[in-house]
Amino acid sequence: MNSKLRNALVAAVLVAGAFTTNTFAAVANGQFTVTLTVQKTCAVNTTAASNISLGSVNAGTATTVQSGTFTVNCSNTTPFTVGLAPSNSSTTGAGILSGTTGNTATIAYQLYQDAGTTIWGNTAAVGSAGNGKSGTGAGMASNKAVSFTAFANATGSTDVQPDTYKDTVTINVNF
Image 1 (cartoon, one colour):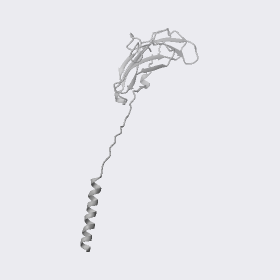
Image 2: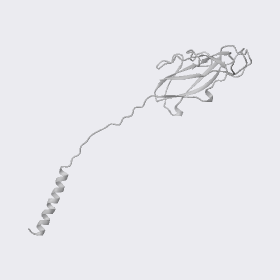
Image 3: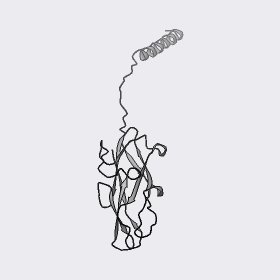
Image 4: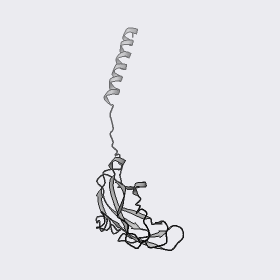
């Protein structure tokens, strides 16, 4: 066999082999999923503006209703309710101010949803505002917070030992 014919035959076999390899190429397919579960959440944000000061009064003098603000962030479209619980665990928002220098005198006070007529207590639950307030979350960014104003006034006598009286209120967000 002459070298030209042999070279031509080798080239033909190589070309045919290349076509044969491509002719039998195939692709296998499969699939998978990517999932993410976003859970509902809420956060309470308080600042110095949240604190309610009933001011300074002379013993035996009535106080006036004062207010403080706080915000709540909840995940987008999450309904929530807010209850306020004085440290004495009152569900009706009726708290007790205690002296801060060791005296045993106390002064009763009341939490309100407005300037002194609608009490703000802690019977709020998921799906029911009870004697609390409700809202709907717009997201967790600070500019999406829902603002609330709480009011308080002393309902007991201020004819007690001179002192600074205080109590701590817990904000309960149910969602």
